[in-house]
Amino acid sequence: MCDASDLGDFQLMPVYDDASDTGFTMRSEKTGKLVNYFLQTTAQDGEGEIQYWRFMPIGEDMRNNPAVAGTKVLIYND
Image (cartoon, helix red, strand yellow):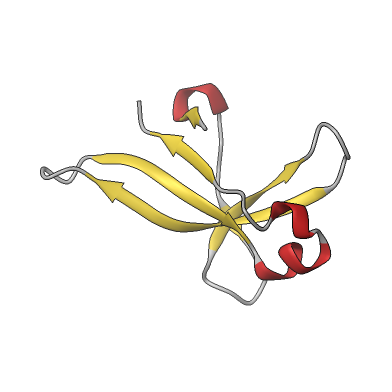
């Protein structure tokens, strides 16, 4: 979890070259392994203001690294 302002010039990229899903790659500080996360949900309030973005690990990375299967990343729009 973090606030969007903590990420600086953060940009989402295509998860795969031939896919419309966007996301980012995160490196574990403990293991050094890379995990790709895709944008699952954009949550908005009643006025349409974005509250947060929820990212989930892609299936291939969950198969290759089962420890990330239960993880998610929330980025709050501050």
